Amino acid sequence: MKIVVLTGAGISAESGVPTFRDADGLWEGHRVEDVATPEAYDAKPSMVQKFYDARRAALAGVEPNPAHVALGRLGEVLGSDLGLVTQNIDDLHERGGSHDVIHMHGELLSALCRACDRRTPWHGELSDFPSCPGCGIPELRPDVVWFGEVPYQMDRIQGMLMRADLFVSIGTSGAVYPAAGFVQLARACGARTLELNLVPSEGSEQFHEARQGPAGELVPAWVDEVLAEL
Ligand code: BJW
Image (cartoon, rainbow, N blue to C red; front, top):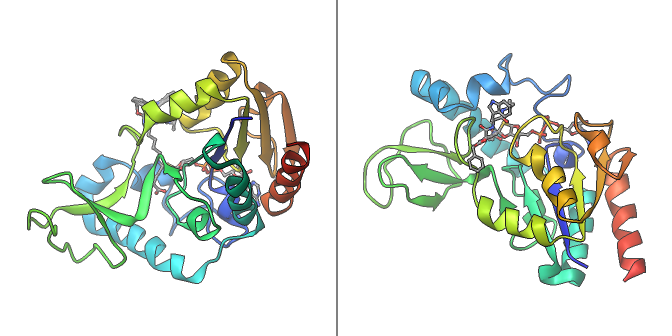
């Protein structure tokens, strides 16, 4: 059975990583749309770099929760029959035991050079505008996908969705495309579809089944079900 799992900020909420659109999801009074755009970066690069520096530094203080660990366990059994696509830029899936995670919105622990396009693993700050290790030009920005930019690995994701037997969306509001449209593509291509979320998402009715509750409880239970049916 081929399964594609899409995760969003909700899967990391119980690890202590704030979501974007829930009541406590604001960052120092900014809406995500006001910091996560190329225009915001051009207008206030220091402010945007500090926003991402703070989130990068906060990774050291959080741990994967049972939902990340359960998906790692599922990947161990299914191997390449599990496609794990995340909109999250944290590294909690990897630390939870998952491999080959597709970070469609980029990664906090990577820097992107605006001059030469090189992607460089990055653990420190960027708000001091360091030079790119590749070309030497101080044009490093967070390696994340802002509104108006094209998400990573879209061709690969679309191929996986078209071949999936089951598509599962976990902890995402369904407010941001193209990820919000994955359920329609997977369903049109014959997959069964399941949503796991604290509350019904904006696109909840598009799924064959929707379960409500915290990811840390729903995901391990669902993984147990899948493994019992194999
Ligand atoms: C729990 C829980 C618990 C909480 N357990 N659950 C008009 C119409 C349609 C589309 C557009 C439009 N105008 C513009 C667009 C396109 C635009 C878009 O979608 N805009 C919308 C605002 C409408 N999209 C883009 O620009 C994208 N690019 C694009 O489309 O390129 C064209 C193209 C595509 C494909 C091929 C070729 C070309 C780029 C989007 C980039 C989004 N970037 C961000 C920032 C990334 C860096 C960063 O992290 O800072 O990505 S924005 C932000 O939103 C971030 C997230 O990944 C993304 C989604 O958020 P998510 O994960 O859903 O979080 P929340 O907070 O919204 O929801 C949390 C959920 O968890 C909730 O449902 C809770 O209930 C739940 N929850 N606790 C379980 N314990």
